[in-house]
Image 1 (cartoon, protein in one colour):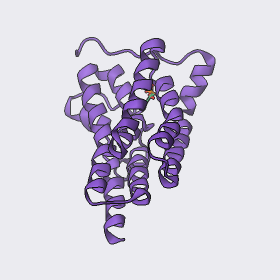
Image 2 (image 1 turned 180 degrees about the vertical axis):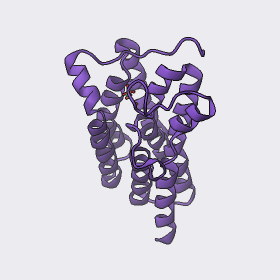
Image 3 (image 1 turned 30 degrees about the vertical axis):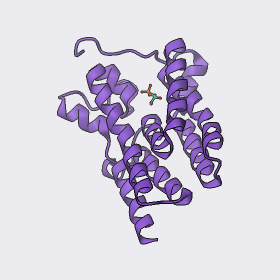
Image 4 (image 1 turned 45 degrees about the vertical axis):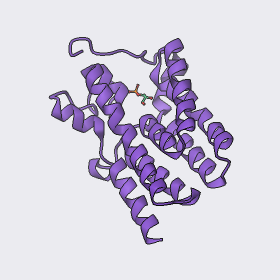
Amino acid sequence: MITATLLIIAAYLLGSVSSAIIVCRLMGLPDPRTQGSNNPGATNVLRIGGKKAAAITLVGDSFKGLIPMLVGHALGAGPAVLAGIGLAAFIGHLYPVFFGFKGGKGVATALGVQFGLYWPIGLCVAAVWLFVAKVLKISSLSGLISMALAPVFVWLFWDEKALIGMQLIITGLLIWRHRSNIRNLLDGTEDRISAKASSD
Ligand code: G3P
């Protein structure tokens, strides 16, 4: 019980470390919360800083979900504790204690949680993301569609109520965090994936 609680708290704290803000600071780029979509996430870092900064942000944000899940597995955590760890890491990214509880939209961290839970789940979600991104070239729509399907992948690969519940909550929160993107998608004004050219 104590180990589970500590794991969940540690996952939240790790999730609260914003890769986008740190990467932009270290690379001398503008604060992602004040540029582009104002979102501290890899897509916005791609816009304002280019591919290298975005790739580091993507890996950093994914690892915030991946590492706590792998530690949970290594310590023999069951589905309920794994669900708590995954949710905590994701919520840390959305509502980070270190950045005034104003975080990102959660796609990369959710993907890390899914890979850490059971890699085929992550692979399926990533494949959907890549396919939609290749065809439609809109990051938010790729995230929304792949994460809307994620509960189905969890159910197919690991039919456990706590884990499906975790994914349903993650998907719900992720959709909520994308409400401005959804408005833009409906208006036809959502940005297509684009990288700042000069720094690549
Ligand atoms: O992962 C974030 C992405 O889905 C949307 O980002 O910057 O276009 O709002 P952005």
